[in-house]
Length: 441
Image 1 (tube, one colour):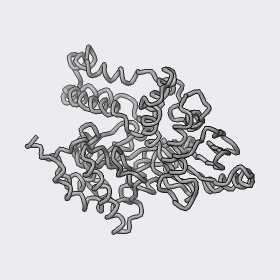
Image 2 (cartoon, helix red, strand yellow):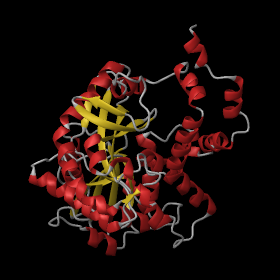
Image 3 (cartoon, helix red, strand yellow):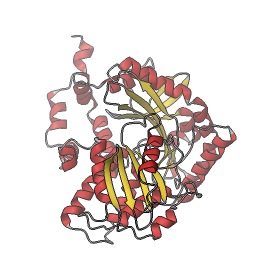
Image 4 (cartoon, helix red, strand yellow):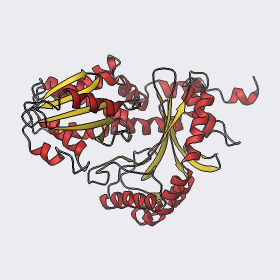
């Protein structure tokens, strides 16, 4: 072992400082070890279990005590602004009595089917938590329900709902899209607001389920706090943690990301604030873990004032900027998967700023004919915190255990979205007045 290598080894004092009576490390341990029955049973990523929980929540006769409140809130939110020619509309649903609704699970392979004879309505709910839609799947379900139920005098109107973890356009325009982020917000508004008394058991369970969705969608404030604390721990104990990581186990996704984002000649593994060159583009590296790697195009970073500006409301949100990008790997359960490239407008304390930023991104996309930029309905509404805006952002990986394939997919994604990145960069400087220069803080 060379003298340089020996000098980089952690000392006993270094190890004790990190692992003995360290309040910050204990806080992270406590966060990671908190009890959640859904996690304990390994069901937090199982699509069929999410369908079971949602089926329970949507059924007015079930034991949650919410009646049809959550059912109507969910359907109305999904239908809001979708095809005004179709019935029922969001307004129809919100004003209806749906206490007669029956919820069927896996009826003719449909995830959830909601029947309301009193109103003459049928709703198909296709649930995609991690998986993608299959060829003509949505159309087949419409055809099956139309043939089997819609000739019955009890039912006059059929609507489709397409529920996804991340933004994805349904393959059939008759389906109204809704994301799990909205489900999380509806849980807070309709179930956990205190307006409807719940039994302690139901309230505890709903909090557990809300926690699962918050973490899956990246909306958990507690998770963000822990990530910020983890970054501080790394800065304070870098030598020890680098040693642990270098000699520990890494996932193929992490290896691939480090290969992509660590290509600059002066370092091996990216750190917060590093500028990296990928596919003739420069990126400001923010954060990386086993699930995602986040970054900011340098053009966005510079347009937003770089490190010289402070953005209110973004304190604990990844890089601390109004917008962010990240990559994530999903597994199809058959050995393959997808690299997904996301861009998002995050939390901002100034609603006018957030609304105008979203509207300007939409405007520049339309002006330049960039169909792969688009927001979900209500993205600019007051109270919204996270709004993703990249579409058709999935890049195939045949083998999720091949880090070279993963790395190539990441590069392909970043290269493919170069026009969208440039367009967003062009409108960002006008928003500098909303930020505060660091020297004035």
